[in-house]
Amino acid sequence: MASHPHPEATVPQRLRILLISSEVEPFAKTGGLADVAGALPKALAGLGHDVRVLMPKYRGVERHAGSLTPVIPRVQVPIADRRAEGAWIEGRMGAGIPIYFLAQDQYYDRDALYGTSEGDYWDNCERFIFFCRAAVEGLKHLGWIPHVIHANDWQSGLVPVYLETLYRDDPALAKIATLFTVHNLAYQGVFWHYDVPMTGLGWDLFTPAGIEYYGKLNFLKGGLVFGDLLTTVSRTYAREIQTPEFGCGLEGVLLARSAALHGVVNGIDYEVWNPASDPAIPKGYTADDLKGKRACKAALQEELGLAQEPVPLVGMVTRLVEQKGLTLVLDALPGLLAEGVQLALLGSGEPALEQAFGDAAAKHAGRVAVRLGYDAGLARRIYAGADCFLMPSRYEPCGLGQLISLRYGTIPLVRWTGGLADTVKEFDPAKQAGTGFGFAPFTHEALLECARRALAVFRQPRLWQRLMRNAMAEDFSWEASAREYVSLYRKAVKAAAS
Ligand code: ADP
Image (cartoon, rainbow, N blue to C red; front, side, top):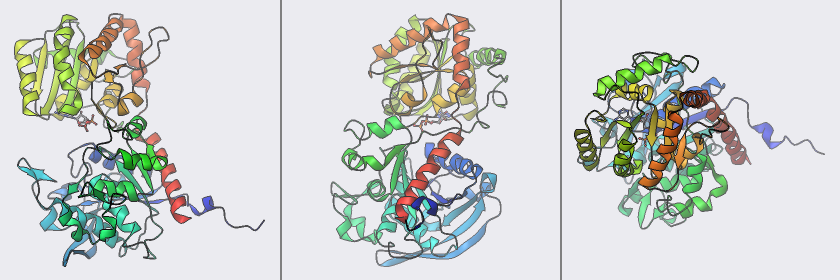
């Protein structure tokens, strides 16, 4: 046979990867996307890949980036019949990874990332058209062409669209593969059709098969239609979003691209989240020596004004929004208290939920403690000091809270949805296997029944210790997930090359 190189041979060992994200920890963060964009590159670099990151140069990002070098002093992008000009500035993130900040002060030098308490910035569509197009334009001048672009969420959804349309004949860019990740399908970047001309994309793309969504422009849909491969942040969520219940109107698009859609669960940084060395908790501990955890519980009860009793302490650290199943908690509360449970909740969000939990704390002083606001230190003391961690979410793309609580030996009680279903295993007392407890129906009765199963084990201290050790033995560090991404990058590169 003629010896044509096997297509696999064309994918090099060391990949050049450009991760594009509108937020990256520690530079700018509003949600879980920033955690992923901050941690995944380090894990990829650890596997030997040449990974770089691009994000907007929001106000203040340079504080964390070392010295900055303009690598592309001018990048011009047409915005309808105008031109907008920006620059790529290079800094460094952890592990010496290059991070490029797209500077355009009119768009990004503002107090917040996407808007104020009054609502979203009026020009978000333009801001992120510029972000996507200046990403692609910039690559023509960087002197470094990635094998694969990993774009994330709606803010970078047009990147795959540009590469497949306006730039598809550009010899430098034509071979770049794309992987597009959805972190939460509920946020899609939907704008009225009058904004389409700003994209520079032809009206022929503004159809249901393209970037149109019920008469509007939809950035996320662009990524879903044009990305070579698609991922979301757990296998179960990848299945769920192909159904009307979870698909947020895009289930048809996702179903059509089912073969390209994969679930890769998020990890957490095991150095940052480590009960043996966490400086925010009163006493460190390990799976082999859990004494410190008892001290953390006593200190947490004291800090929050909860009775110092050996009763089960259930913790929650959460945004107070509908998604998180908080009405179930309110409805189950009398039943939980009847079982002798204490509840410690830290969160902020919707005023009605803040009020309801505030009222519950006032009514059940000493047994229910509620702290409203964002408090990274208290969050850690709850992860360490509670016996159980409750996440009864209506939907949960991945969820980080349960991963952190497993690491801290705090037993997750979860609703079986999305990443919760993929990362927590029901404890079987007979086999002494499993890491937590879960329930499926979205009802407070099911939550209570699940809690009762947990409490039955809690009352058997040796069995509970076994369960804690099972939880702490799980490994949700980034390395395994980074390997999964690499194999998908390879698949995308192979597909793009053929
Ligand atoms: P989501 O991204 O939907 O809010 P996740 O479970 O994926 O939910 O991640 C939430 C993260 O934010 C967790 O690390 C959690 O500890 C943290 N967090 C949420 N609310 C607070 C708060 N009020 N104070 C401190 N940390 C919080």
